[in-house]
Length: 120
Image (cartoon, rainbow, N blue to C red; front, side):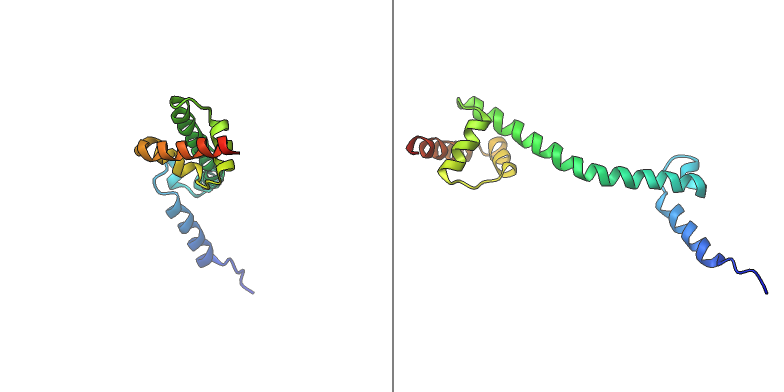
């Protein structure tokens, strides 16, 4: 009986992997053995960094809100506490956008939070 190697499927799998490795430098895009390792690492890093991107953006938003709040005489943590007490449910991403792009609107939210905090 002849030995079955499943060659068409193996070739298809290797070609698909090499196609995914296009754009990598040198042998990492040309040779199966090295492309396989490069893709394994690339996929690991992309998964990990999708999580890190969320962390980094949240930190950026907090820095922007903090800078805008300090300009108006309050710290970030006191501002967020005042927002909670005033019942204003705006997320950090939108607050940061307002702080950078539309300072008048941020001033209004800041004033509402300050008044709501004083009333409590």
